[in-house]
Amino acid sequence: MCGIFGVSAPRMSSVLEDLYLGLYALQHRGQESAGIAWLDGKGNLELQKGMGLVHACLNQEELAKERTKCAIGHVRYSTAGESNIINAQPLHATYSKGQIAVAHNGNITNAKALKHDLESRGAIFQSTTDTEVILHLMAHEQNLSPIDALVKSLSKLRGAFSIIAIIEGRLVAARDPWGFRPLVIGKRDDVYYVASESCALDIVNADFVRDVAPGEIVIIEEGKLESLNMPVKTERHFRCSFEYVYLARPDSVIDDKSVYDVRFKLGQRLACTCPCSEGELVLGMPDSGTIGALGYASKSKLPFEMAVVKNRYVGRTFIQPTQRVRSLGVQIKLNPIKGLIKGKSIVVVDDSIVRGTTSKMAVKFLRDAGAMRVHLRIASPPVKFPCLYGIDTPTSSDLAAAKMDVEALRNYVGADSLCFLDVSDLVCSVGLPEEELCTACFSGLYLKE
Image (cartoon, rainbow, N blue to C red; front, side, top):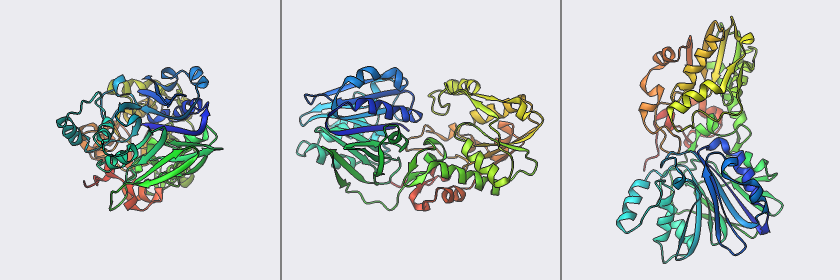
């Protein structure tokens, strides 16, 4: 999971500050590195990137002074390739047909095989990220124009790839034929934007135009938009259901579905399928469990309380790169309000259990705060299978629900009761047909390649 943001203006403009703000709005999608690439007045590619958060990597004051017609940006958390500066995106290259910069969200599942083939033909890779495969595939299509080379290269990829690129001075956006990761188009006046989520359009006052369709390549130049289709036939789509459960911001809309509405419905269904007769109040684990808790409280007629306070200066613990940092993050990120909890039988709603770190620590600090009983309700199915498409759960050994049944997991996290939703409840709450959604991390039903 990463965040990508691009901008195309019909004339040289001060739009790099928009790019900075768009990446800031997507910071939840990646906290390890950030970077931007843009064309200067002479058509040369300029880059600025570094390790850490957007404000630490990018100089907002300097960017506000720059003028460009085309720029792309990226925030990263690593799922393919180590967490270091050489893997920070956008990646760029100069080859016989010109300069290219590309930023990518997702995992290319056949990248290893493609890389091996390219290396056997003389390609020299500079990074360990799967994104670099795209640049080398294009460079090996010497007889094709850069855009045609991109189309042919993307048709060879499998897995998840929402990308934005600067090619021949144009902003290019593409979404894989299965539609794993979201990608949207926005517009303000005569400036076009492309972003991982619609919330990034809001911060630059751009109007939502539409989603990039699965298998579509969009080329934007001089205020005009051209659409191409990848020559890849698919039996179905695989839009990531975990985007709605956890990854996306609640103020985003993905494939015409409000993330907020989906999470509220998940909580309502949870109240129906996992009621708690002795519950006295409902609370959610900030932030991604809060909306589900509101839905649960609404349906169950139990009072809702903001009984756990989040330290706003601590990032997401799930997407931190090491277990030690994740554990420390949980301890300093959340703090219960004892006066609301002491002596109560509480229902705690969270969005998911992945590694189990947050849930175990949360139950402990709620008991330490005086909770009489802690009933844990999870607004998604058990995460039993590793994600191959851009979430950092590479093996089943990382997943608590893959190693334990519900009762053993309840005992592990220390809750008095534990209940999950079924996959069918998740699909109904999202509101897309089952054949449109990827539920692989819950069901084990992966894309057949």
